[in-house]
Length: 490
Image 1 (cartoon, rainbow, N blue to C red):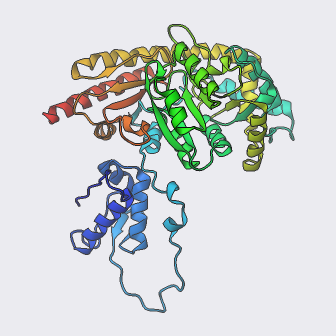
Image 2 (cartoon, one colour):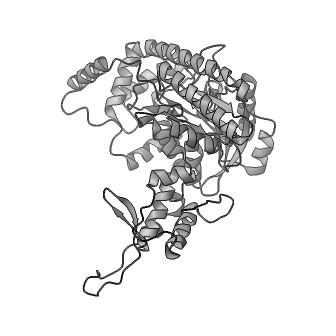
């Protein structure tokens, strides 16, 4: 079977795949009874998202050209004539035509690649997930049991839509350590950053609105804006954060709904927005009455140099919507984030939460509030910093050994990501496939570019999840993979 996908034409990738397989079946090149590669295998062969292959195979099943058989997989079976008595009456729903187009052809490989941290025999250098090495699970279990007992039988199922009142009080104190002044009425509790962005996009974006975002930028962030109907216009990022040279010009040209800024230890570059640019962004946005959404999940993870306060700390006009997440500094699987903003915005956000959710997560809110109140969270933060700093050192030593191969990078002052330029001639898509075959998962750089017009020469590495020993193992495999690919390129 010889299949090719062309990313430069407008025909959806799933349709290209389905059409080629159909033509080969009808021509006899693929014989009836043949077994097609699994969805995951085909996705790896072609370098596409698994959901793209699922949709292609679904189309072929609808045309009765293939069938799925338990324990076997997808089998070629040309349609056979059936008697009227056997054939069911009516017409089958064609589900692809029922689902809105923008939710179907999501070919970005980010999701499947990100989930590879669950594969037992794969070293994950791509997943931005907190380490499991810090929290004592037995103590956490005891704390949870104590919280349930304290609250009583009827109290622990629901929290107010704006979030637990006690937690919001503790967050007011937590925010003060970051220079942010807020009241409990200016805080909305949510589960994670992605959920916060989704609610804010629903609340603020009208179809066609322009959103100014950094580039490269997290796929979760830009896809949320696009699915809400926004038009993403990007601004380049360097190691001092969002470049401001043309920011005012872009604001005048596009009249954006808001700016999105990942201010500290930017995903994927690890950049930290300089103080000069923080002031510039606030001044320009204030001058033109443009809102700013600031995402700030990694700001506490600083290992060297001065710690910068968030944009929100200097926001005298209350134009900044601030999102903080505990995703990198809490128990994996127990997610919690919050939004800080103008009271009118928070009231509307809370109303939207009440429409979409029966209840917010009571248990995690109570647990975070407890750890903030007794001070243990601040001690745990220091343990996370020490753990991540050590693993960053391990990864950087290994990267330094790859400089002779042509690998380039700038070491961030904190966070959990390192943005690496690959040697000339090495394509990140090909590298990710080959590295995974050898037992290491990575994220290719192009998924961080909304138009897929960059990043083919970059990968994003993450060191938060795996142990130092596993990171060393994974980096050795990465080095050997790059070396092998360079030999074959000659």
